[in-house]
Image 1: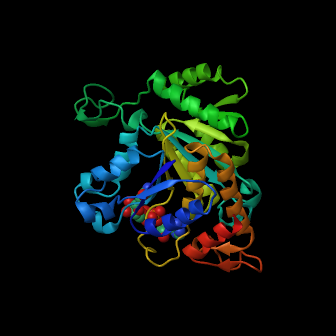
Image 2: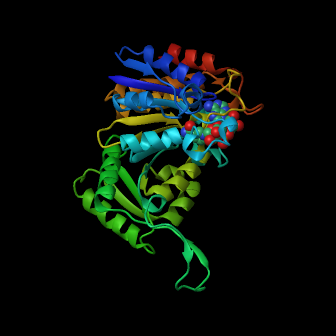
Image 3: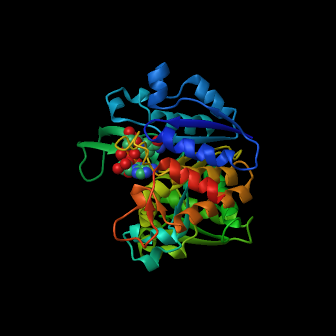
Length: 360
Ligand code: NAD
């Protein structure tokens, strides 16, 4: 098993070091190779995704990615900005399925903006289609309106579209993920208004015939947005298109209240994947040794489950994280004065990583 380790910028190097520590403590044999990406790669070789890094990613079973970006690169031309590395990797590896779990650990329920009883034990997996929909449909652009309410005026337009194979492959991913969980899939669309999403509903329903052990429910996106804040624990695997997934996955992430805790994965049809925390490079706290490494450690657990066929090792890491939280250790982003019982203690990045290794 070969893993490409791409730490990137800001807190990327600090949090990746802890995830690597955890991986090395497992009784598994990995080949790990590290390469520059993002601003660090631009500074070293003039491009955020150098050829050597791209080739390493392609030749690996999985990529463990820290974070990229720094305000000092904000004035670079778009193609050379650190964030372009992620888009380049997604495209080159054909990563079409984005997994965004929203998990609320019992000990961190106070961090949510919802009542504790609504979120305690929350464990939703949002699966977002990543390469189609209105974000990539052509044509798009600006023109003079030929018709509509104001003919002759300036207008802008985008194209929403999905082909059958694009919907089929994300539906398979969702049903297969559900088979490893509660065997329920909620497909979110806007079939009442949009032709594209009536088609989405039809194709998901067709694919479902191959998964009689999984229950399928359809829901309109406006209702799904409401259910996520009304009764989020009723949702298990939620699959949807690129734009709805973009919005709903951020809404779900916020239910847990702690950005430093959320992993993510993007997979292709060969189960090769890019695994990264949902947060960015946090330049404001970089180099201080206080970043929360748990989202990255949990991303490594997802990597073991979805790309490396090591579900037991994944579960061991997830249980170790729960144990460390139960023991009262908190990085500053999940520590709040007064909201903790005796025994709660603020720790830095490395001490949190060490505690996970000890719990393993
Ligand atoms: P951010 O996620 O980096 O930070 C937002 C806030 O959350 C900051 O206050 C930060 O200190 C805090 N935070 C984030 N991760 C944390 C952690 N693990 N532990 C403790 N606190 C944490 O978002 P931003 O500030 O909007 O962006 C900073 C840079 O990151 C920008 O250059 C942006 O483009 C980039 N970015 C990269 C990715 C990625 O690499 N996938 C994603 C989002 C943003």
